[in-house]
Length: 387
Image (tube, rainbow, N blue to C red; front, side):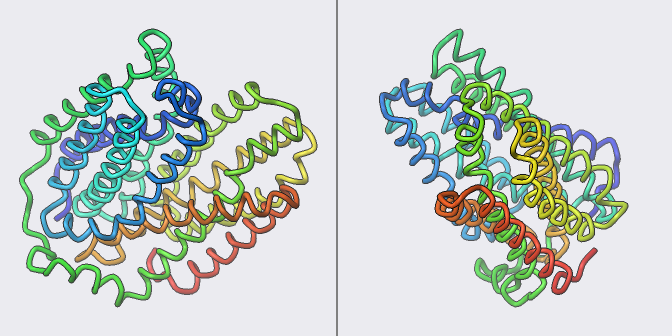
């Protein structure tokens, strides 16, 4: 069922952007403020980092949840994700301990694993494929916006009221967003998957070679990205002797690069075709990875190359989302959950691979990521049959 009222679609997109901005701010706020959260919880930075790793592993469980959204509805999935997010924030309002922080982190991770595929599936149901790239990209601005807008606000709250201050603030926003979404979204309509047994959506996915190829592309692209991203901070510290300055510069660079990539997807993916935009993003990423060690002898050169890497990988990942929504409409949420799992597994593999390769120098990370990107592009062009 496609969205027939542009006004309704605009209100849905505005709501989804706002909600993803809230969820992603809660999800990402530990990264720039890791030492402050570690001090507040009374544990080491490594302990918090291990908790973040545990949270990331929840993405692999997404395929277990996708069929539920296919069976019980997109609105149900989004509302349940917001309930979990608000509960995660509430845990830290009631208790002040590392155990509470760990529980909060895991609940936030679980909320995104449920909310994101449900939201993307809703857009797949209601937005024509010819405009779906723009619609998905607009909601993805909530990812880059969490860094550009959310992190300064989180820093101000923590400086004024302490390290726990963001939790009640985000929790209230989550509850308000949940009630707004309950009113805004239409009642669930009958979908092709309503009659399916719980396991049937995954049988549809596993029997579809195009879906499996597309999920492989997401896995490989995510691995290629994190293979470089996990070590760039350490490389810049060793190469240029920068600590806080490098952190500030690269943090801003991440947000601007992600925003630029999402903007390119919004403007180009529906015109060029989703698969072609993914291919161009992957090709640019491969080139940027090769360029990084060549330009990395100076700080400006390193920052330019890193910016290109952020832009390119963001284009590849974001433009793949609307493409994924059309691969198996009868099991749409299951496909999107599978994509979450593929990206999460890729991040884990990339982090492990990146730290192992870096002992031989950043050039090996970059060449490996470039090779993985080219492999992903070959699979995309040969086996993914959708534009």
